[in-house]
Image (cartoon, rainbow over all chains, first blue to last red; front, side):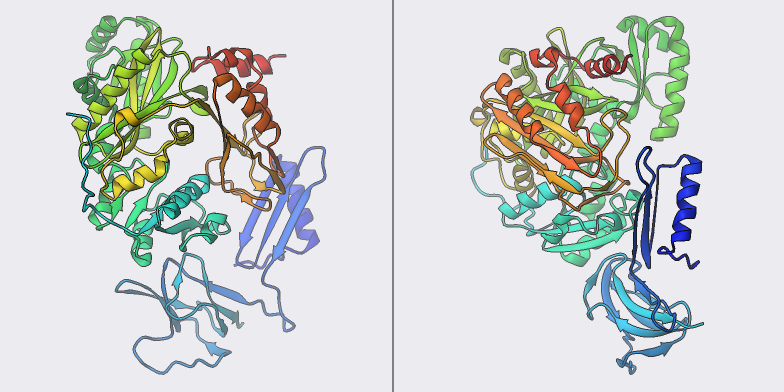
Length: 142
Length: 463
């Protein structure tokens, strides 16, 4: 994912100019990390709403939310009974299974997709979760 | 069949939790009906509707997919999975989306759930316009002149059919609807091209090249008859509506009863609709749509679902149609006879859409402030509030403004007053257009056909 900073005025100005030039009246971009909405109205001031939910911390690391890929029941950790560390934060590999979404007999594994530090678990064990619901927060490691 | 209802309570498919497979005002409306019946509700929503208010008042709410309707509200597997995960015993499809999808109704029943609507077979029959017409003719429902068979490929055969009917005729796709897949043919010279174009359009848009031909009516009104049926062979019709105020085949204003139609003319049509329901084993609510011209009714199609405009019939009949639909799905016998059905006063409904009042282009965005009218004889069905974000992905209907009064003239006056007290800020709406329409003298006289609104708009936009 490219790292567009929605709160950067130069990015907003660039997008607003491009919209005006193309005769497009509005643009809306939603990403897990934030939302940008630009409405170009003839004869009025361009309206811009920006909300950024994931801001870099003091170390310059942006937390990323791992979301449910579909509806089901949330199962943190392994179901095999192997010991799962509940102590957070902890480092995880890209392929490590952080938990599952259980749909009947099917377990859908969830992983970070990149080396990261698992910082928060955002859903309760066995909670019913919907598509896109936040399950974990991780901090990607370069 | 005698007009009686079974007295014992049925041991039909009972359920205590209803999954509402829809969004917007109708999701809120169904939730209200369920709550009043003591049923729990599951609201499913797309990512775009994550903040919808009816999700917060449901017993369970579950996001089933991204904003695209194809990946959420039209995703059969996601809906069935949501029902399973939440323990819902029934699915209410509302209107639009999967409400008239026979395969979905079948899948719901096969999953052991109750589909709050007719059987898949009924939906399938009525979805095929030729089969529907055949069923209506068999039940004695008046139909538009023209054969109840598909138009043959042979051009000479099409010419013979058109000559028998008499020009102008209209060629329609058997799988069409909503004004799509049809062409008016004013004379024989344009027949072959019209058939070829419509057949190709039908093949591409509806997956079937099947066509049929009917007499084209020049200045009809659009009249509907609302029916309610249980699973015990009992059926009633709940009165009639006029939905002639249409723009691009989309209804804008509806009213009940349809003005100026003598009771002795409409009564046999209503009775024929009820008979047709019994013959096809129909269950739940449904609407027979007719064209009405020169004192005669012509069946055009049946909508096998709850209609957007059901509130006007609720206002004149005093019945809660959504509750009745759910009770019928529970297997309860109807608790009223045809003689119990009344039509009291007059009702109008205005569809308030998030759209530009002049260009009718959709207007998505955040509603910054809302004022909705209140008072005797005024009802607003909506899900919006200040701060609500109208998503750009779906139908632009954001509210239905419904009024009821003793007479049509008084109901029109009440609607004018209600529209004057309605304000939605932050987005564009068609409220100014509706206000202007309710000042129109021809509309006030009840003399408008299905083409009137388009002509009225053309005149308004003329320099």
